[in-house]
Image (cartoon, rainbow, N blue to C red):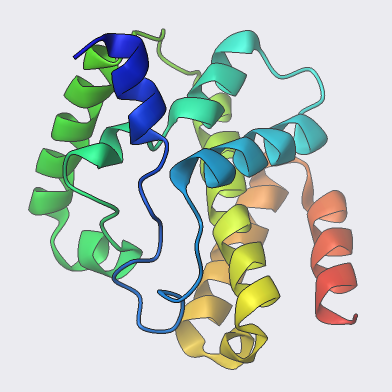
Length: 164
């Protein structure tokens, strides 16, 4: 298959399909990746082209294995590594041979990736906010934001979302 068509088709992989609380929502990877890139720009206004390219393609490889849940990745780190390798090969097959990110860029991308998931949960199933796993993710994101020097902007965003 043509790599352009392959990449375009891969953007329709559905997130949350294995999450009983969010599987009813429809969130294709292309939407998530676009929102992640938007968050990258808002937290890192001088983001490199490379970081933005990674943001808008970071889940393209999921067309092969599907969207593996965060819980599954934590429970099976060896399997998660194998799936990450499969996803990386698939991104290359789609024509995305991007340079490596700096350590800071990796952290920004991870924060924005997690933040988009958290905001999606708040939009669609706000009741989940009180659960321990989502609270733990919020704490991890807060720590990452502090480490990156964007703690104030992050805290303002979370305050705005949780008090509306």
